Amino acid sequence: MTVPTSCQAAVLTEHGAPMELLEVPVPQDLEEGAVLVRNRAATICATDVHLAEGDVSSKQAASGLPVILGHEMVGEVVRTNQADVDSIGQRLEEGDRVIWTPGYCGRCVECVLNHAPSLCLNRRGYMASNPADYPHLTGAFAEYGYVYPTSGLVKVPAVLPTRWPPRPPARCEPPSTPSTGSARSTSGRPSWSRAPARSGSSPWPRP
Ligand SMILES: [Zn+2]
Ligand SMILES: [Zn+2]
Image (cartoon, rainbow, N blue to C red; front, side, top):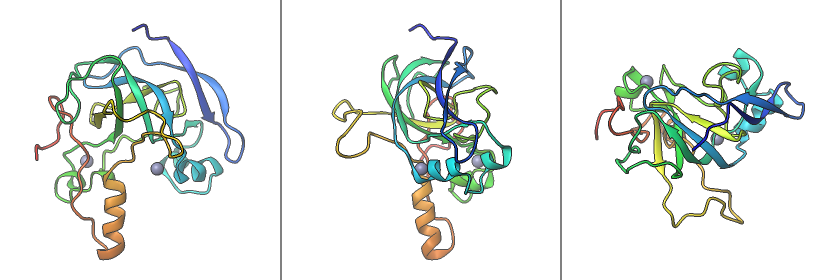
């Protein structure tokens, strides 16, 4: 599949202002294990709204704007670099619909000992980098998206439609986020939680 050198993205350039439709580079060289997708649908999470309004303390707020929002999305595989299977070992091919998580290192104390990858000390998140910087497309409100090599990535079963009225489209919130939050609210400590692991090059320990 031909990959364009740039694509359109809704970029947040100023808190509280409308996002701007800008042309953003599409990474031509992927890191080993990374996947380039064509985004098909994305939800709008409360976090997106808070970030847009500038009323949430976050890494991206600290690093400033611009940023591409959106972190719950479904897309189609366009290109991979040695990512032949998804996190549960299913063969990955061009055109497959997938959902994915942020990238977790699988090696730090949060990932390994606390089993709380959403708190990964080396997390590579979405909505957290300037679209001018590689890999550019780290938010869902864009035509294309970049899946980190250490992201959980799962094919969407054919039985599930991309859009699912009247409910939101198929989406992906890091599964450890709500489970960890829930556990913290009851016990004050993170509980066991794990993001899906990519077979092959993934640093994740096998269950
Ligand atoms: Zn969210
Ligand atoms: Zn980690």
